[in-house]
Length: 231
Image 1: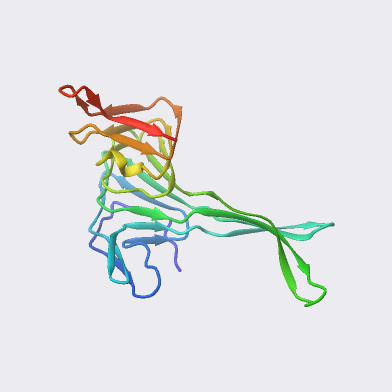
Image 2: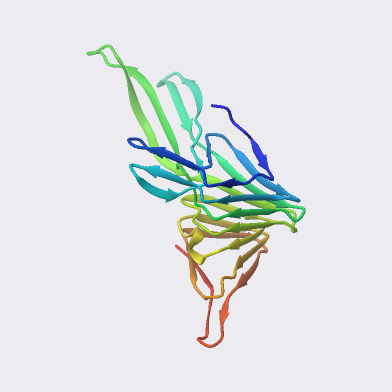
């Protein structure tokens, strides 16, 4: 499979991936490596993209499939250890008045860490894995960046990501719940929750590591405003 590290000023409309028995992923883009979607004095728009599994349609523009990296370490007592780590990042970068616009969902797989050593079973004389650790410890990463002039619009869900908004990013959420399944880090930039109604964003976790501008809806008649909560 050929990998494309970056896509600039390119739009994807009404693409789909379909499977009748397995699992289709990534209506417009399926990636097993890091990828950057950028808009540099131009537009990158994703709209109408979907996956179809067993006849059931679901919005999906991009699917990030975790990569695999093996590290082998010799140890006198345990023999060969193998540490397998899956990690992958999607970067959305808008600059020079560029526009990145998503009507479709973004999804991806969780990262896993597996640590084990191999041992010969004296009865079967076959190699067996002795597990030391096997756990999901990282989600795929989404980085939102820019130079302060560009605009990133997310009108649909970004699912199960470790998401970080960085200095220079101007991010507009079409609904308060677009990031509700994500671990969110606000590392600068500007976040706009403006959709003409007051609601609540319920992030999985929230970390604020730098000054971040937040624009919210305020309902003076009902004394309410947009809110952010996190576990």
